[in-house]
Amino acid sequence: MTLYLKDATYIDWKTLAFQSAHLAVSPGDDGGIRFLDALPPANDLGTDEMILDCRRRLVTKSFGCGHHHIYSALARGMPAPAKIPHNFSEILQYIWWHMDKSLNTDMIEASALVSALYCAKNGVTFVIDHHASPFAIDNSLETIARAFDRVGISHLLCYEISDRDGDGPKEKGLQETDTFLSSGRQGHVGLHASFTVGDDLLNRAVDLARKHNTGLHVHVAEDTVDQESCFKQYNKRVVERYAEAGALELSKSIFSHCIHLNENEKRLLRESDVTIVQNTESNLNNNVGVTNYRELGDNIILGTDGMHSDMLRSAKAAFLTGQATEGLSMDTVYGRFRQVHDYIRNNEFKGDTDNNLVVLDYDSPTDINASNFLGHFVYGIEARHVDCVISFGKLIVENKKLLTVAEDEILAFSREMGRKLWEKMLK
Image (cartoon, rainbow, N blue to C red):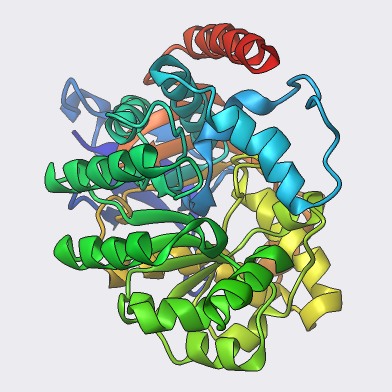
């Protein structure tokens, strides 16, 4: 099946060059795009081929999320915690750790489906996720993977292994990760953060990542408590601890947050191939601080940390905050927004080929072209402009509606599971 895009204004995501043309989008894991001078006559189209009218539409590569928490999808509007948290440790204890312990498999499936729905409608076709459900670990990653597959979103998953709930969940987390990666699925070995990860778990996680030729996906120095705990227990700082364990030697590793680092830790990261994820809105929401990511090197990508599934929104937040913290320019934030594609390609993960596209119905009040695109990217283009989304060459969103799974069924299921989750959390 070939999908034809008629009269498109195509924007090269790397060079920002504009080209007016018809596009032929071929399907599959190795599919791509071709530029055409003319479209085939309608009566020559195959039964599984179609022409999508893209007049006055912008077409470019779809988006990727560098760090998500789909398990938090059912948190929106949930009842307040029994005790109001006053610091980051209490936010984890009274909100997120209370929630993730209450999840069951149906709730995980609902969270994955609704997150995939929101990603698709926001133009995000590749998601790197960090999952936690300490008392519903078995088959959790495959449950998420199948939900994302149904919607048509590519993924790179991991389970957030930790010592915080005892040996049982720790061992199950290691087994779930090994089983998932052994099945042929792509993913990481996930860890929560240094202050909840003992040496035995850290060393076994690194060994497991080496076994499966992947990296760690871990929270790093999101709050000062991570550094304080690490220095008190190990007489070293978080990145130094990970370096000694060999985590920085794994080029596929993702370190999320990386806010509270000293100069030596910054140097270690700059000299490694580790990719760092910036999650501005989540950091502001948790009041854990901001940092100058320029000091950490060039391997910076953007995530949402489960706050939402809108990467355009994440880019705007990173830019507006980054002007004060690091003199961030529009081209630099766009580079971080797109760096996820380089991460996927350089590490030979699948699911982000050139036949992943977004069609924007951007009602710009002014001219848009290659020379001023970045101004439109930061100040104009929003998720509401996403009209159609193409994943693996297949149209999965058309006229802002999901085509692969019934939206109303996903939302009804998620609301049902949300009510059950909240009731369980109040007991």
